[in-house]
Image 1 (cartoon, helix red, strand yellow):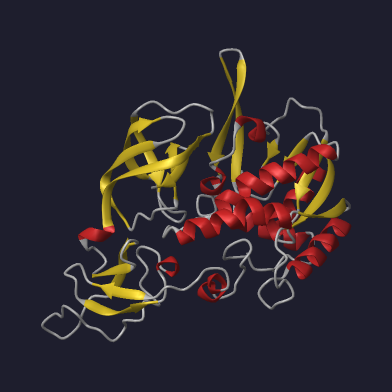
Image 2: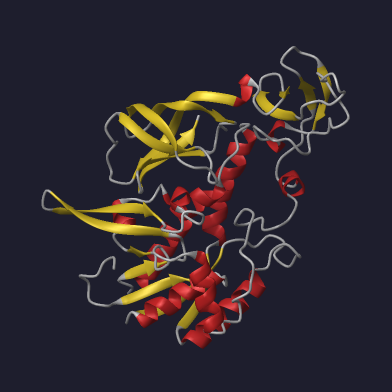
Length: 371
């Protein structure tokens, strides 16, 4: 087990009200740790609405804590969240990029504000319900902490954790890293946890299930402009470049336009493919495999390496979005700020603002923001 050399100390577990963090708390208690649950409230705007369920989540977390027999407290990080995550999220959208707030939330809230708070409670370690693993490796007389993929590859969340550093990983436990999700659900049902059947939360951490465009609308000005083909033909109007992402097919508002048709009258779907910020123009292309949607190379900035040092040039795996298998790539250049790589096979809809995350087998090396 990770960190096994430590005496079983005090662990503060982030309990969200979901099944993963609930089972994590129970497992740690079984392993002999002194467990304290901490419920984070990160979002306050319109929290009484149908989409944000933090009140229900808190009730679920509290009743699980009661059943498992651990103390739980709620802590409010809404100010830090707005400052460190949401402001950055809006900045990126305004610049025409598509950020991943879950990555930022982990780096800035769950493993910074939360970790600091846990240490003030006298914690030795923190734990979350992420599907990932930590491995301690002795190198040249010092301990290096590696972030590994969760064993359940369909649930692995190392992609979202790639900005963690040595200090954070050295104090973190991922109790679910070795388990398949089906086993976590089974444990929850066996323990008769009140949230055993609760469905996994989807959507962005603070937006929940609400319609995304409607949410952004409240914070970003809409600036309509033309939707054009690569040849310059105007097909319609977009509502604002911030509201579209590369590879987006639904919600473009040009559904009736056939464009290039086959002999049988059918036509390929349209996809958002480029943004011209200077001219406020959205370019769309027809067909999933249009050259504008395929990239063999990328550059990234705001790079973060888990070991603290850039990996050597060479062949690795990389993901440019969460739900995709590792794609073989060659790392051409990397330092503390930037990286550039080329892929063996072209990658689809590589999106500025999203994270590219690099792997050496099961070991997550770190990554950066696609520029």
